[in-house]
Image (cartoon, rainbow, N blue to C red; front, top):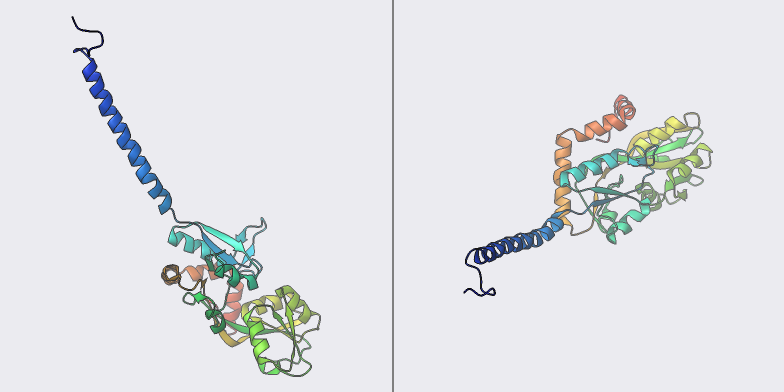
Length: 281
């Protein structure tokens, strides 16, 4: 007689075999999940943290809902799509952008930043993506007619802290009095009120500020010093630098910069063309 403790020849061996096959399949699937899940998470690219000061319309600004927008924001978003990375805009005061980049708070700077030799000793730059230059906003009663008139005793020249206009004035103008201000609007107000003879800034901003204050200011738009803007990067970050250069080349070839100009600067493009002044893009 078969013992009740012995396997039944009718079904127990088959059940055990089926259980073993099922358990092996489950273990294989589980190991597969454990093996591939970490790789999938690791392959997800981190967000691209882009630094800019959102107080320079139409390049860096906010919309009525407080969301970042402008030429530089759209450029950053297009770069993110090219890299298949989400973009996080970090709003940082202009003179704090390079320190933020060097300490790793941001991955790059897209903030209408001129690629100067001085800055190139501290950070790296992409290929230039935009041409600009220093121009002058002067008061209607100001004797200044060109940059040659700036460096004279009794002249008061306004500049925004940390800009190339600030650097130019501090290294070139030895006899004029400098007003170094934190905000563009404050420098413009000095000219509007007749407290400063000129404000050194880029030609597009000079045009826009003259339009806002037509009765008290004049815009000397033709640049007296040409400059280029580029994306700021940490030295040694050659992979991102190469990716950004590739993106900029393709973005220009696809008409991306022309579209940004048409969207944000149609009036300015027409005005510069009428005066035979080269436009930014």
